[in-house]
Image: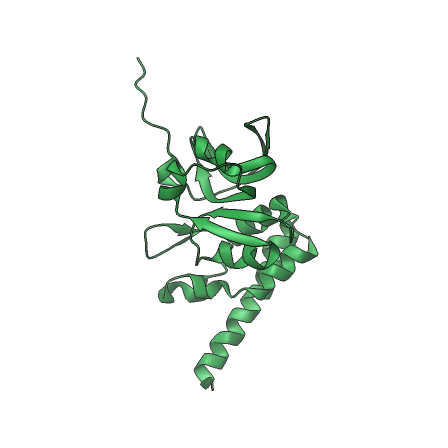
Length: 201
């Protein structure tokens, strides 16, 4: 049985979740009913440090205990919308298997695997997945992403280009991924996928 304080906290977070949908997602063009339903059903406050729970629904990234960041609700809403997950998808999340984006994706796909950025950087596959979603922005795209996608498979990722992060989508065709930027949006950068420093004269 919840205490009065817990009930009050749950009610406050539920109200914040509704406000997130109405004031952040809908007003920014995320109106797909299935995306809104998914984000209404997952308690975002359970995926941030306890001290940050009252700020779980703010419209910016939140620092996590492991030094990473939880992207803003709008980033994850746009990622879901662009991914168009289906019950037939065998999906891979490059990110936390127990994190917020995994909780959003898992009910929407046939199966979901997850790899940390460190492991995904060097992972090789044989066209294993129909959908790969990267929870963050990459500056240099690793070849592993191509090898993990089946032909015709979709990739949704953030890109870091000249200091600006963008949401991008792509499809594997003839062994290559053709990426297209769809929105400039603030996405936490994954340090594992930074481009190596290059000298210039």
